[in-house]
Length: 50
Image 1: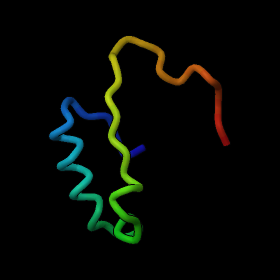
Image 2: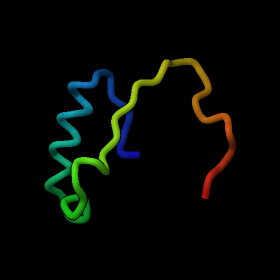
Image 3: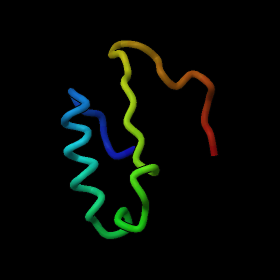
Image 4: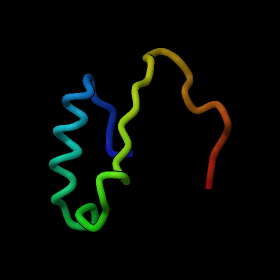
């Protein structure tokens, strides 16, 4: 996870910035995933994944 942002537009801006950075530039757009979450709610309830 790169971060949590206040809008989809801000997340898209950050995605574009990171696509040019070392390490990230090796991956296609399909590797960057943006999703919406509700605040004040548990979103990761299935336990730790390795």
